[in-house]
Image 1 (cartoon, rainbow over the protein chains, first blue to last red):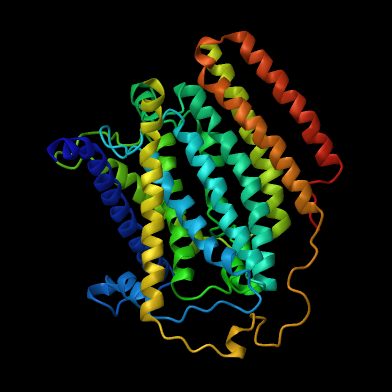
Image 2: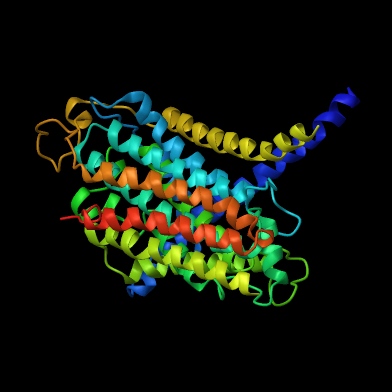
Length: 329
Length: 123
């Protein structure tokens, strides 16, 4: 009995760690939705949610409870299997990337050598959820939204993959912990300075990858109603919503790790090892919200043009320059 | 030995994926238990701004989307080729740099061709 317990212990610890990470991430995701509504509210001289709990702080919980008690409608003629599957693909692909992100020197769930590849693979997978949702709903709006989303995600995926090559060139590794350590020991401390082009391309493609304003054409509510998830209701709708915000959190975390020095800060905060990582993460999430409150939506041809004619050449140029400079030194 | 250690490193990713799936599934099940169900034919009809739906929802779509998909495959494979080069660039030296410039230049030829033929034009 004891032997079995001893053998199973690492596995149990691993599961508990994963569960804690997931619960904390879910709380962050829930309160990102609250922060978004509150911040945009104040930017537009409104109050934002303020009825449920003190200053509206219980709003995300009330939203979940409400969605749990709503009717789950499957439209006639929908492909049921795919219709049920699609939100799960989006959610799992969006949230699993958290496993490879080093939140602290000594806390990373999966310390794999190809961390960046895992993240890129998972972010490509999440577009399947969008396409399948659009196709299986048997609705015109959903179908058009799914088509647009797939073309957009695929285009910006390339720019994003190329923008990270510069980071790999400088760090000489794809392991995210190694990348942070390389940044700490480099003269710049953060790669956002020498990799300014890469950082710029990455941030724009990250916004496009997560289908956020100003690149939210797949769900442009003024023309496509809600895009690919127009036929989804109740908790299946909530799963897509969660997946979008998980995507935001994950993309910000990747940007913090690859360009902003991860867990490192100007000084150690005693007792709070995650402090600097979270501060940088919140700053980037605020940036996402700020962009949404400021910019109008792109036109579709402008969007594809920006991806293919501006960002990809810029990312390639960045690779050539970074390689040349590294050779020089 | 080496292989089991390698597999064990990837295990947490799988565990996290399963946990996320379980959380999503339990939320759907709770929804099934808690929610009322009163379907009728108008409610189940697909949404087209309140009008009765007309025609087939799955249109034939523009060939541009196929062109983008093909270009994506080309450029994504290029990115995957760049990754191992970037990681081991530190001890490869000037020759690898020149080789990669040639590789990128060859791809740029295809890129310029696609641009001239209007693959990035949307009207």
